[in-house]
Amino acid sequence: MNLLIHGYGAMGQIVEEVARTQNLTVAAIVSPAGGEHPVSIQDVEADVDVVIDFSNPALLDDVLAFGKAKQIPLVIATTGFSEAELAKIEAASQEIPIFQSYNTSYGIALLKQLLDQLVPLTLGYDIEVIEAHHRKKVDAPSGTAELLTRAIEAKRDVTPVYDRTPRREARAADELGMHSVRGGTIFGEHTVLFAGDDEMLELKHTALSKRVFANGALAAAATILDRPAGLYNLTNLYEEATHVTHKRL
Ligand SMILES: NC(=O)C1=CN([C@@H]2O[C@H](COP(=O)(O)OP(=O)(O)OC[C@H]3O[C@@H](n4cnc5c(N)ncnc54)[C@H](OP(=O)(O)O)[C@@H]3O)[C@@H](O)[C@H]2O)C=CC1
Ligand SMILES: O=C(O)C1=N[C@H](C(=O)O)C[C@H](O)C1
Image (cartoon, rainbow, N blue to C red; front, side, top):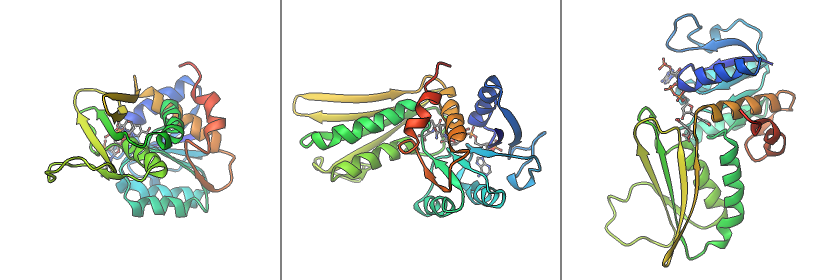
């Protein structure tokens, strides 16, 4: 598997490190900051089998154009896409295999499965999603908070509310509050709180390193390599990705 690592910030660098420990071939790295690497994906000349993208939505068009021109699969792990950008990813997936997920950890895949089962049973409980990340994160709420919110919305009639400051009223039963904490070096923490009368239930996932995301992205890359064109995610790649992603680091 000849990898192209697109985006060479904190995550791109960890993907490179983890790929090398797994004896995978890093054929090219694209670093908008320049240095020894190409600045743009369009300048990559190496033979590449799959792209792993941890960068910025501003670069989406370039990544999709590259994947379609070379007819190779893409693993898109960047967060913060608009609805229009997500639609572009979906359209491109009719031509090439694309894995797109706002969180590549195995634990979040498990949390989503739990929510699918649990949320229909929680009428009468108020649900809030709380996420915490490092001080360098630029997007909020996190992609994972959006992913979890969509999973909850699919199972209960709720309306996401990100900012309560303009409201001066009691919480409506159908609200789904979302909250962001930023500080320090927190790798990523997501809590789904079910608050009932005189009791609370919390489902919480804590990433203990960035390696967990790199490992999951590499597992996704290996899994979609030979897939037909289509849009893949943690749910429909779940079975195959499990044994790879969940191996001991
Ligand atoms: N799906 C998942 O499981 C995970 C997703 N992520 C997501 O991956 C992305 C990258 O995270 P991380 O590596 O921590 O972020 P960094 O800020 O450390 O790196 C981002 C990379 O994208 C480039 N970049 C950023 N903005 C632009 C822009 N406007 N135009 C061109 N290049 C740009 C940066 O280049 P330069 O250095 O020149 O600024 C850098 O190479 C984020 O969206 C993050 O939320 C992160 C962890 C897990
Ligand atoms: O920027 C990060 O670091 C992370 N971003 C993703 C998100 O926005 O959910 C995934 C993970 O939580 C780390």
